[in-house]
Length: 328
Image 1 (cartoon, rainbow, N blue to C red):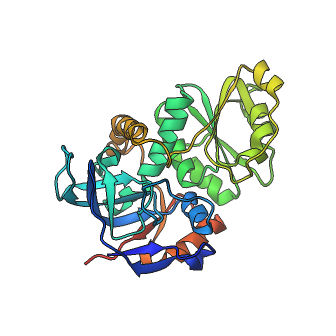
Image 2: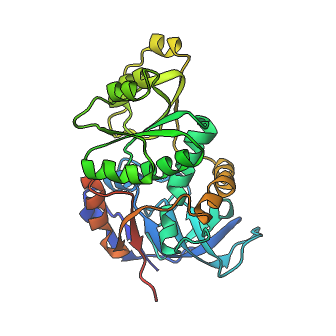
Image 3: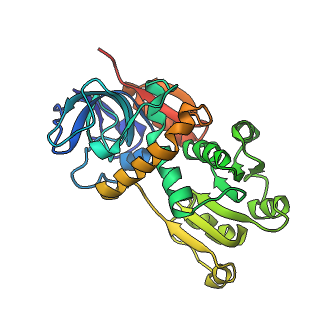
């Protein structure tokens, strides 16, 4: 088969479409013929040499895909050859075929095109696990989403609105904020021109956000704590603004607040399977009903993954960037 390889870390040109050995599904796995994959920030970090795959994972980038099962490995039940699926991966999505642990498979939701289903697994699992399973966002509470127009952000807006929460977002342009509003965002903050702490305070009568979903990390840590409401929960899922920041424990204590930080890729299989099961139970019905939908900026041929990475790094996209595998 062919896959996007990374012979040497570097810029987008480091991504090479090459012939590689065909994968074989192991115990508890199925082999999926990939129709499409999606680009994530973690793929960019892997390409740069900063985020290696977990032990035993595919060396090729790609944390999610959609396609059809072409082989069932030993010990797998409940799935059949020919099933159309999307999947959460530890790697290998930028390829024509990828082995997937059965616990990380999801059926393609009713009403969603197979190719576009690749836009769902990573964002749905990330948002549901952090905003709902860890931070326990409840109806009537306020969620602040940094990077509201990203793949993560567009999913977070829709899921929070679906459960009856109020949503504030930060984004870097009027166009991005307008798209967030279309998806249901209530409070729109241009982080280039406005102080999100002050804008949130004004919009919530001084209360702040009950939950903050943060992709920035250290750069926003102090301001995020100030933006939290009493009993607020800060969920850090990205480190685009650095890894080391100063935390005012007094401010955290006075608000009886909590800070959590999680990643998805390196979790044990049993934890990923539990998250995927929760996503199938809670998110998939919303997709089938049309309450939530994938947001796709554009689709590029998988061979042009370098261009997709340039687009990702420019931050000019809204929603997900997909890669279409060549079809025989």
